[in-house]
Length: 137
Image 1 (cartoon, rainbow, N blue to C red):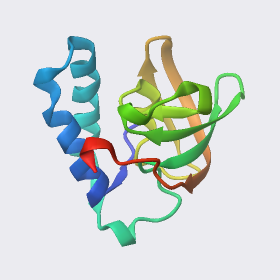
Image 2 (image 1 turned 60 degrees about the vertical axis):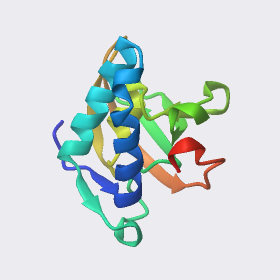
Image 3 (image 1 turned 180 degrees about the vertical axis):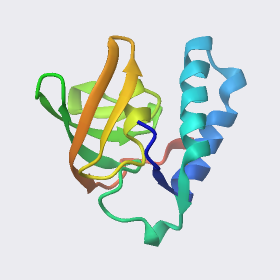
């Protein structure tokens, strides 16, 4: 789907820093960074305090429904250095992480993943505190 997505100025700056590091990473990561840059380029950038709470940003906890089988899942969207699948922290560089960025609760989106295209519906979005800002903070 090609719905408009929304990204905070702060997240846009941090993502741009991550994308600019592309020449120093492996080819697969460069591919993911290119997809992330595409999302950044189509996003509507919003001042930090004006971004609605229901928009998925970095450090948002998101409840998703896989529309193919009804499975519900919860992830927190984070930068790669904070990702930890065992506690539900998904990297912004993971295909699903890139795909959900900027959408709102109630939105549906489709995204290509290594296992094929997924269709997701966003049920809930909750902002959580960051464990750390890493080198990009």
